[in-house]
Image (cartoon, rainbow, N blue to C red; front, side, top):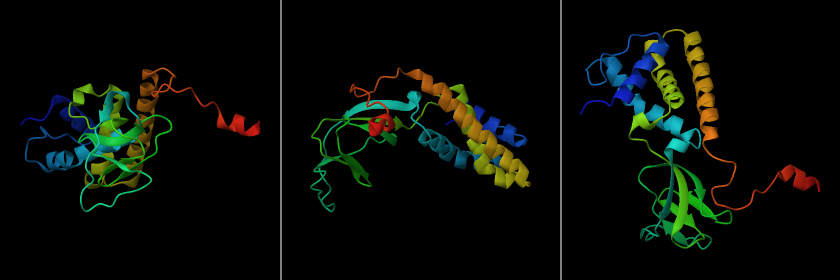
Length: 198
């Protein structure tokens, strides 16, 4: 199966940032293509984990699941939920009063089904990524594979600084994709520091 154009573009940009000629294709048998293909999913996931991205946000009601027979119950969180397969990072669970904890086996909560969650999902269509986010992924990929292709610490440090700036730029642009209202519809809590003074 050929590599999607967006992914191939991200990989090519990563090599350009390293000032190394990119592979002709991610599907060729070169060491560059193998290194990039191996680390690309990691670079994408690192960037998705870094923030609450609007283009990867999913709001879903998840049904209650049976607790696996080998897993103990928890009196504080008696309801068990299997997590969606595309989940990268949980952003919100229930309303502001919902107690919850993520365990290896799933999500536990003090709230009965259906449980509303908002999460960052794994992206399978790279064309849906914003341009600034794709740039951050390219720089993250460059940082992951650069130790194999670059010999000087100064170039590695430069790439890492560029990656930090690119992630911040992508976050700033994505932050403008919603109003100031809360997702759960509850009123804002205000500034806790001001409340503490009163």
